[in-house]
Length: 220
Image 1 (cartoon, rainbow, N blue to C red):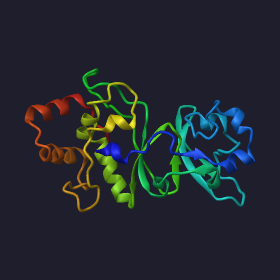
Image 2: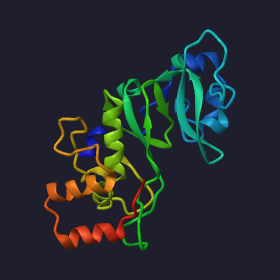
Image 3: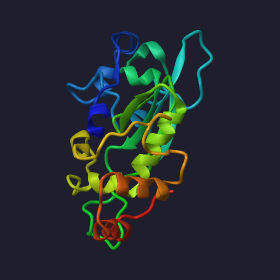
């Protein structure tokens, strides 16, 4: 299941080095959350440890995807200020942990998720986003992105996702695929064509396919 390759909440943390260099972080962050790379990180720690422009210092800097004033941005942070998961060094797909719409059928056509985006090696994200996969190649990440944007995967997500909350456990029933060139799915095809392959793979009936095509909104 796709849930097995989704990083849990809080996989990116601030390091002891960050707190040593900027002890005021402990007072700025919420009590008990001084090491968090939280959803409000760019708002409360901007120009302290997160920077819009890459600082011209001897430190090694990396980028973090997050939100600032409701817009997606990538800010710079010193690499030694972060504790990162394995996926940080690989390709992955970032997807908002909240957003999209609720249950299938609530509206005439449902999206279910916020817009996913590919993360490159040495790029992380705040707790605003889930991280999917630890991919060796950009091609695998692009295939995973197509799968996640497809109607089939989002329909399976909709079994458990009935609110805007998009947590790892909601992906429990979304089948995991082989995203390499050895896959039984031809990932070079368009998203609608990939969905048709998945409908055949899992033996969906015409009524089931018609339901999905009508109720789940396409993503580009």
